Image 1 (tube, rainbow, N blue to C red):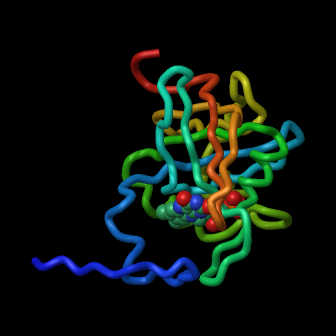
Image 2 (image 1 turned 90 degrees about the horizontal axis):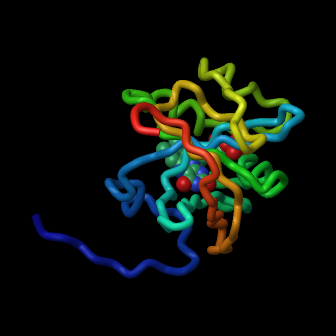
Length: 168
Ligand SMILES: Cc1cc2nc3c(=O)[nH]c(=O)nc-3n(C[C@H](O)[C@H](O)[C@H](O)COP(=O)(O)O)c2cc1C
């Protein structure tokens, strides 16, 4: 099939037809929270392992209002407040839960996402942010850097603890 190419304007916010598509290919559930119980879960496609020593990951979170339904993520504010977040690998066949978790912000009086999704918040070893018990892998992270990229902020998190099946 012939491929099409087009330039993308810097101000373009409606990416329909360009994205979403098959890139990126995976989603993680970022959990963030405080010791006094504020918490949320934010599905994130903008994620990567960015360093092995020290083991570090990067996540991209929207930090401002943008046309097309983008808004500042509560997870961003909680991660900034605490300096912590958890990257959770979703269980298999959890697309419907991802859609639910990504369908509204957990800020303010919104229904608690753990309760809505039937997920269990576990106490982490190192961070206040809740670990999601049903996930096969969870990485407790401390924010070490932030890079502002337009509407989104990329938070670099140093992995402090790993919860996973199998090798530990
Ligand atoms: C599959 C999927 C991927 C998403 N990826 C991102 C992302 O990479 N960065 C982001 O800021 N929001 C992303 N979102 C949107 C947030 O998950 C969504 O706005 C979420 O409800 C924010 O919750 P919060 O305000 O409680 O943090 C994604 C949503 C879905 C469904």
